[in-house]
Image (tube, helix red, strand yellow):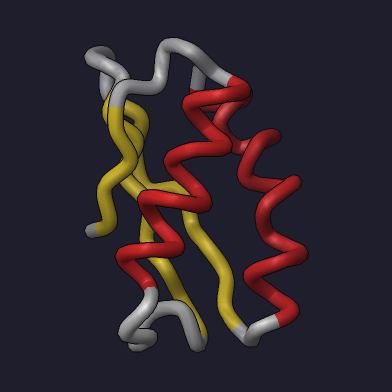
Length: 73
């Protein structure tokens, strides 16, 4: 599943990079929790939680039904 998540993140990265940020995959647990680290401008952005839940998590859940949650570490 880690490869699927990484491929889905590759589709999201251009939008994040356009705003000076990025996302780094940290871990994919067996129970479907994906841990990511927001970097660059995304790391300190007050809207990062919204980006995480409404952007990254929504897209990952749509593309990979096994994903239950995306959390920032």
